[in-house]
Length: 89
Image (tube, rainbow, N blue to C red):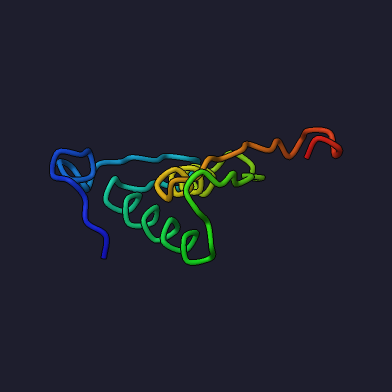
């Protein structure tokens, strides 16, 4: 289980809403747990500090969690616009 600093928003108020997207609502505590799990999975699959990871998703809670997890794992997210030209993607 991931832990967080008591000085962080997740530590001070883990029950408060951190992400609201449509009908989906995630608290700081839930967000932290999901981000840490995703970041751990990225590292387990070979992601190293400084690796660039493309994020090809519509705006959503999952997109926000993915971006945070990439940053938490030490990577760099590269936003890819699903509506962009195919050659650019």
